[in-house]
Image (tube, rainbow, N blue to C red; front, side):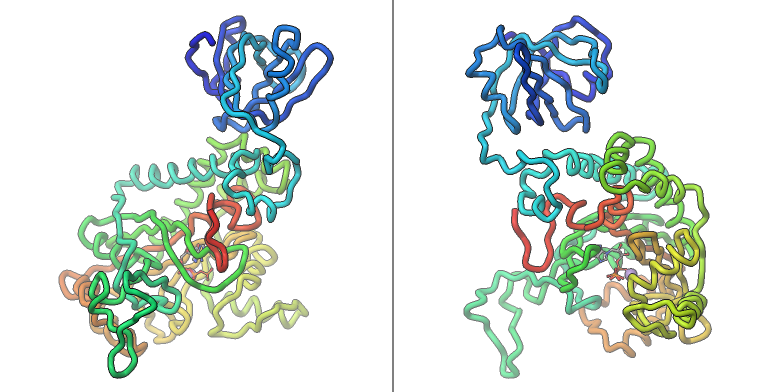
Length: 467
Ligand code: ATP
Ligand code: MN
């Protein structure tokens, strides 16, 4: 075959260089035949759009053309011509075609319109579909937007460890990391496992959050963010939880809870605006296929001010709803950890816009949150979103060494491995705040997909670590 430099389909579809010889490579999405011509829709992942390759059957070996089946990989040399039919602006009149990889009829993606559940069983191939191609292109763009947002604001990207030996938070939810022989565990007289012969000489786990190390960085570099994998062994089989997900955690010295809310709101709006500005083809596809209100919802988020409401006032609204006859699955009372149905009631029914709920009871929040003067609540802030519920969880941190230590003792948190964290309050303590955004929850919102398993390439959930 004549050597012509490859053009990506995304670039080709914008070209008006009619009559030039081009090369494209990609996978066959569909093929239609008429008597004299075969039409092959080719996709190379650079865009959701296919380029149509027109094959004059007389000029090609009939047996070869039969091999250009759905899923096959082709390299096509041809003439770029203006398209007469509707849809695309250009198509390719094939001159030479090389079959790079054949694809037989066992290919799992031959039938269109398969369910999302089926697609998860072929997660190794699903990026080749329109839907997952769109989702993963948006995923990339969102990751880029996040780095750009923080970089432009002077935040530093800080890498916190993935393996950690601090089990002060969510101990029960942690995946253990060990090189010990599980068939022959060494135990002491009380029957506890002896970790001194383990790789790190102590019990180690996968991180559930980079926050504590993020605080060390913020109290040195001023403003930082982390963006990394996070692991939670919570056995919650919901459409919003993964065992392995990606979290973005900014942490900023001298920010109070109001600054923290301002940052969270600006950040989410920036990301959504970025998607509208850079991913419109993919978003339009998802809007038309799955979620007719998607574009509308994205636009409305960037234009509306988020509601800011104290937890206590939120509970009042929910109690009034119950009194008015609204049925929730879980009870509502001051002190309860809100369920997703409660959060969504506030956002979708009551206010009809995102809500930042603040000042939660200290009992349902983490030990490091700054205590309010009332002795009952802490300066927590959760950002609640339509269709998602909690998308961000954050707080102003307790900067007072004595108060922090007292809370740690009250809760009986094992701090022997946490002396380094307390040093932030011992040496030049400062007010500071931060939050965590679940990357996949943001993607759920931006793509309109309804299950978190469908916005990460290879989902890890209870009983599932395939691929
Ligand atoms: P939830 O109440 O929804 O389980 P959480 O309060 O345990 O969340 P945080 O510890 O506040 O979550 O974590 C910060 C953010 O990380 C959450 O607001 C959410 O966006 C995301 N997140 C938490 N757990 C998961 C998970 N298992 N899978 C995906 N994202 C998650
Ligand atoms: Mn939370």
